[in-house]
Length: 336
Ligand SMILES: [Zn+2]
Ligand SMILES: [Zn+2]
Image (cartoon, rainbow, N blue to C red; front, side):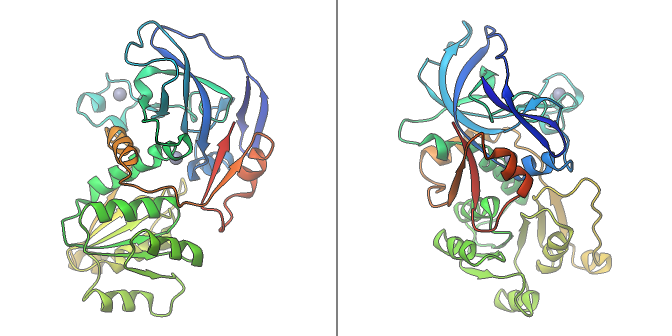
C-alpha cells in the first residue's frame, strides 16, 4: 500500500509499505480521512517526537474491510473512527486509572503506523463504530474532540461561569462548543484571524477579540466585571499562556491545552498569581473521553460541518507539513 512515512525531521517519504499481518484482535481499515494536526507539524519539524519510519497521522476514520476472528463486535463494512492512544494497562499509572501517563504509551501515527496511508491494521480496542449519517470526514474530528473533552473535564466549568478561549482554530472552536454545552454564561474567543473570529461567533461565541486589540486585557476585564472565571489556552505559546494567567478573575482557573514547544519556559507575575489564587492546570491526551466525543459528534451536539477543510492527497502532504498552517484554512485533511 501507499503510505507517508516519517523518516526524520523535515523528511516525509511517500512510499510503498507492506501491510502487517491481521491478527485475531485486529481490524483492517480502508482509510477515508486523516486530519492533519498541530502535533504532525511538531513531529515534522522535530519539535515533538515520533518513531522513525512510522506512518504518521493519528486522527483517522475509515471502513472495516477485514477482521480477525476475535473482533466479534465489528462487522465488515462498519464505518469507524480510531482512538490512536494505546495504553499498556499494566504500569503503575495505568493501574491507578491515569492511563495518559502510561510509561509504555504507544500511539498510532506517532510510534505505530497511523492514518496517512491507504490502509491500516489496528487493534480492535481502538475502533469506535459511527452511525451512517455521520460523514467520515466529520468523524475524523473525534480525536481532537476527545482531547478537548479532557481539557473541559480538567477545567471543571460551573454552569453560569464566564469562559475565555485563547485561539480560534479547530481546537478553540471545539472548546467553544464544549464550553457552551457545559453551561458557560458568556464565552469570549481571542483569535487574530478575522474569518475565524466570524466562525467563532456563528458557533456561539458571545464576544470575539483580536489579540492585537488595544487594551485587550483591560477591555475583557471591564466587560466581565473582573475577568473570566476560566481561560483555556489553545495555542501552545508562552505569550498566550501568560495572557491566560493574566486574564482570569481572582480565584480563576487556567487550562493550558495547546501543545508547547519541547523546552519552552513560561514567565509570569508569580505574586499576582499567588495573591489571586489562580489555578493553572494542563491537559494531556484523551483518557477515557473518546466514546463521549463519538456520542457528541453522532448526536450533532458538536458541529464541525462549518469548519473550512482543505483536502490533501499523498502528493501535497509533504509540502503541507513543510509549509505549516496557513491562516485561511482551518483544517487540512488527508483524503484517500
Ligand atoms: Zn492531534
Ligand atoms: Zn501503562
